[in-house]
Length: 602
Image (cartoon, rainbow, N blue to C red; front, side, top):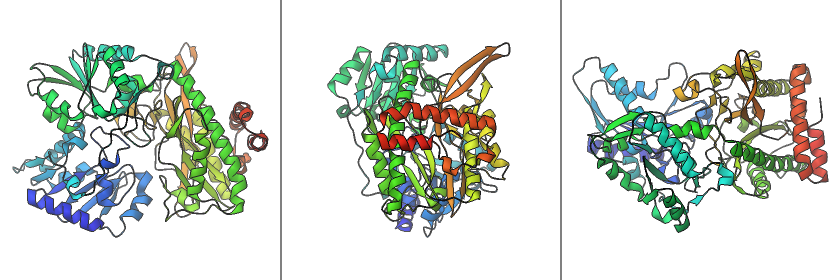
């Protein structure tokens, strides 16, 4: 079936004279998680991971994805004829390198300009020009047709679910004040207006939420902000009258979703337009009145949104108490249920969701849950299916990476749990990951420090064993928004300028999630969310630190205490005491007894 779909796309390419066609994972807003309508890459390739790009040539096809998905992609692409390109691996060309080489003698490159960013297209064309080295044949772009969608005959329709307003007791800042801050920023660039296309930025700025994308409470929309007013482009059916009235009170008017392309085409000559070319789609820029002037700057909302205000931080703490209650109830249940022999990866997922739904203001999962038993835990972004659904046995590890959305905030927590006796080597690996988590979270650092500076703390114990992991150590987390939000991140290597140049600031919430994975055996990952806080100020400057938000015990049965330093033991004991003191009053007697053992001092 996959081969037939690729063949149909190649037929359409041939009809239009296209040599290579790009099918990314993105929607029109450069979102990580997208509506089913936009999953063309998944439909054409069979690969279901959230990150990947398919390149189809006249007689070939290749898929690029990162280390989180190597195993999954290898399995899902088997027999499809699609070549897997492991991004970042030695000798593997990047997408731009591959296409630059393929098109250096000219040709036609096709894509839907609405699902590729301006920065990506510019980088690609620059690489092609460099590779040509004076060759006369030009590369032609066919950028205005969604060929992948033409192959997908029963493509899901776009939905328009009702949007709603997030009360100020959760947002901590009014829409009017946020808009004023943003206008002040683009005025510094002498811009007349700002175009926002990223859904999380729009939702945060306007204090609105929706249900247009799974796991992310965003509204499918664009936003044009001018000096005195703003235009929100969305499906009118998704905007209830009371929300429209509230927006209009702040001079935000509603227009149909697709009309933004015509509106930017008819902006007055000389208008100075600011946007972020790393996010805005290529078609948007091509649609702009050529007599306008543009300013390419990072959206000011990104940093505003990343630095949570005191109300948001306090609410996030409340969300993690609720989540901690749900997780502790679940882990207590799991310990008693697994020996009975009727717990599977999917039934465990359902049970955890049941405990989360008991919590007030719960609004659903924050991402596709990962519960991987045994060898499935080695697949970094594993997702259980009916076919792969494993029974949890009272032996080995189960890795569980899950999260929830609450009005009070977004959670993301990973625990690897021992379901039975472990080998000395398994305990050694678990403890090395735990050391990384504890040392990263407890570090003090000078203001101006970035995630590149701190990543070593999470990997040091693993490196000493000759081990490592193929994913970032930490990502930014939104407030009742996307579980993955920049610019704060903790990484070994530079990925984008934002994630490597942006220092940690007060109020930033980041994940702390080192891990280690052994193909065909097991995986271990331990993840807490941490919030950046100010520490003491000295003659050398302002010191910063992180505090744990997540309140779920680590599995002491998997710890080799002899590997921990006295300081690490102190950090772990203090954390477990906080977990017990905070969570135990909301548990029943059996659950409290379980938690008391799970958080016992070592």
